Amino acid sequence: MTSIALILFGFIVVYAVVIFVAVLADNFFRKNG
Image 1: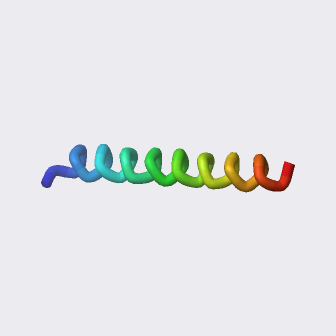
Image 2: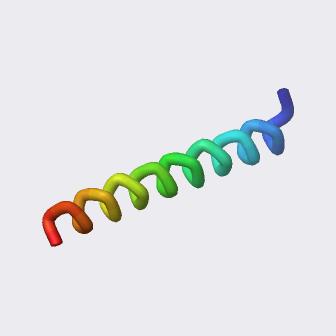
């Protein structure tokens, strides 16, 4: 893999983690209203 591919892969992983955390936080705050 080239460095560019590694950077893109890392960006996708970070983006997915951010979305996952945002969804968990949204569910948490909705339940605790």
